[in-house]
Length: 304
Image: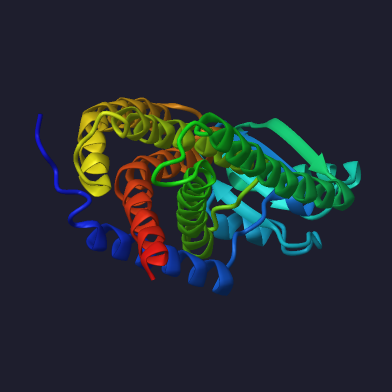
């Protein structure tokens, strides 16, 4: 088994995480996440042209006299277009179809694949529920870790394992949100309820990876004659290959879904990929170094 000096080089990993989290907070503060239809309310229409696909400029020109609020045109395939607009009435739906049918490319045929409509009050309620879902998920996780590590009292109390795990999870969520804030600003990528589902999935996956490493530390502490830092580093090396291999196989599966799955789930899969990668990184290079730092601070406070 290789002996990676992860704990010895903890300043590098912690500095990298701090820089990335700071960048994520800045872009979230400046640009923010771009809320999608689920959170703002409005309508989504997906249509398929039997002939050539019109350009975005041509579609905007067709809608120039239709008085649609915040019309967003998104080409998603060779002949497929997604339209998003604020209005939710059936009259506006019919008007949108009429505008599309006026295009020259629609003469060969035009098919409405789907139409979804959400009121603004429903969107506000979904935003509120999404916030509380993430909050209660974090609360349940910290309670579970505190309970699971209740037998660990030396040199760190069990609640500190839970606190460090939450810091690690916050790191993963902030980085994922930061990437989507950048994508939203430059590419118009929106966040919907599927993004919240992806974040909750990342929480569960990441905490599982962190607990595996922490559990190895818990097993090795009673029988180790090394220092706490050396014991943590040995435990980390024992779990390293398992964590990396599991993450790689998971990401390979998600890459296949990203490229060969439908357009409607690509943002969901991308969020999973970013979150799972960050989760593996934080479990190995953030959570365990923080354990060592917490133990070092605790020892200093006792000796002072």
